[in-house]
Image (cartoon, rainbow, N blue to C red):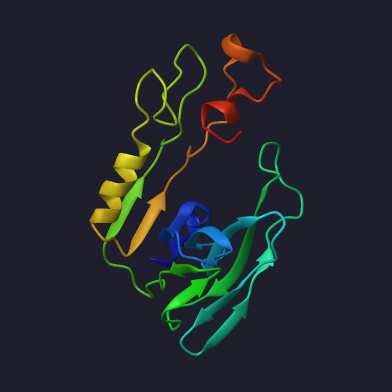
Length: 182
């Protein structure tokens, strides 16, 4: 199992969560395996916030920024990270509950190629507020989560870096507009 987790570590996570709790600083959080098979909690915060601590039953862990430089179109948010393990129960960070990674996952869900298409003649309805073929990632992700897997593996193409040139040109941030980021 270790080799399997290592090969897909960059796209494997043990859970994802979001919350509308009062006084939270994070908007989304998850636990994933890194390239070296370590479990790591990550949370999304506003660029103006500082990274929270991961709180758990027996202590806390400091989180650090993954990068000080945001990709184009993502300048209002940052991602924080901190190492976690299967002994850390009741974890939370920035008001978000985080799942405890399983030391030996038994029930595994695998997803892939879930990006929203905005080029090559097909522009999917990525936000649900427009026309075009429906982007079914939310339905697929909710269906997988409903099975309560110990480990979810996403094998790639979660985000296509495309531009819808015919609608607004190659340099005007069409992708961000199509998926509701601006």
